[in-house]
Amino acid sequence: MTRSPQKKEDHPSRKAFAKVDDFTKDETWRIFRIMAEFVESFETMSSQGPLITVFGSARTKPDNFFYQEAEKMGRLLAENNYGVITGGGPGIMEAVNKGAFEAEGNSIGLNIALPSEQLPNGYQTESLFFRYFFIRKVCFLKYTLGVIVFPGGFGTLDEFFESVTLVQTEKINRIPTIMVGKEYWSPLLEWQKNTMLAEGMINDDDLKLFKLVDNAQEAMDYLRECHKFGVQNTVK
Image (cartoon, rainbow, N blue to C red; front, top):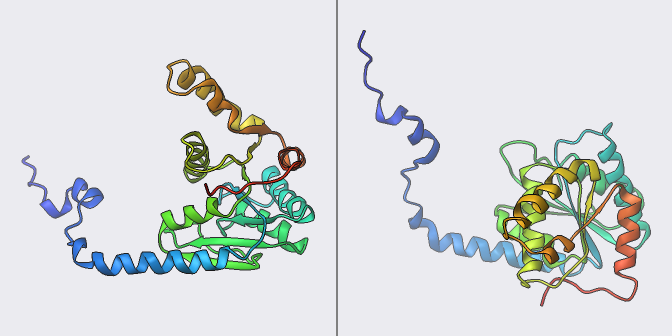
């Protein structure tokens, strides 16, 4: 039996990778939209006071240990006069915002529309909404005095590696970068050591750009130790 030829419009490569729209016709307006998003977010974020950025999965449920530790993290940060920045969504983000919000701290959500997962949580004292990922990512780091990373997926890995890369390449000032969850993160760190370092892709000092801890209290203790003699923001 002969197979009928597949129509070009039904080919999986066309569906996955090809889009025939001429995006260049909108480039000028896209630039203005980008500028407006930068201006609006910078004006809002510049008045928020000392902040710590916390990353983590949108999929973590309230009965999960790390959700509960993230909520504790938000509370501890607020009690120590830090506001929090999260991605504004559910999971770890919601937990951190909730902890800070209920402790009457500054609780900021940098929200973005995604095909799934990203619905703004209800524990934000200040909510910003972004069209562009890259502007949102600038705000995560431009206004923070430290980064805390809870377990997460591709997005969390992207945020963690971007943070340490910008410090490694001296594009931003060094700030405390703390990974919470030794059991979760240890396989990744072992791979960095046994493969990346062994192959000469990173240096010994690169592995000192972040601190691995087990829980929220240890993260808070390390952050306070780092800030014992003062703080610096990321902007050079």
